[in-house]
Image (cartoon, rainbow, N blue to C red; front, side, top):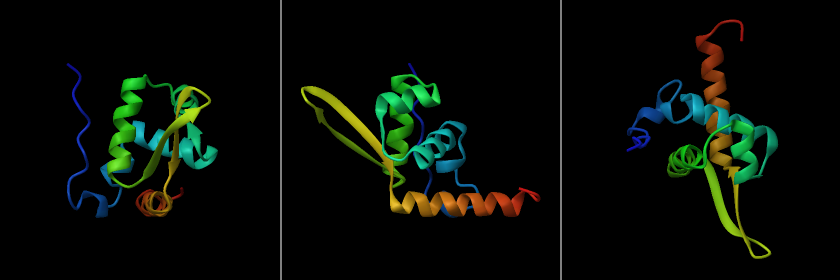
Amino acid sequence: MCPRTPAPRDGDDDAPLPSLIHGKARLLILSHLLRAGQTPFTELRAAVGMTDGTLSIHLSVLERGGMVLIEKGYAGKRPRTVISVTADGRRRFAQYVADLKRIVPGL
């Protein structure tokens, strides 16, 4: 059985380098989405090199945290899931980068 990625703890998001963003997988996902913009699930999966299950779990955590928007629909008869960063997600990621620069001199 695969362990589930826990949702961020209350108050944790206010700390410098919140775990919602700072985890390696979620940092990679957010970084890609911020560069690429709205991205289909299959393209994001290939770009970050994760399995469907792993990516789905991390996206669920980011969605619950208000960082990403997951839109499910159809392209013709084929299901299509598209992910984008929310306005609040962009703001919080920018704050994460500012905090990181404060913590690590020279960035």
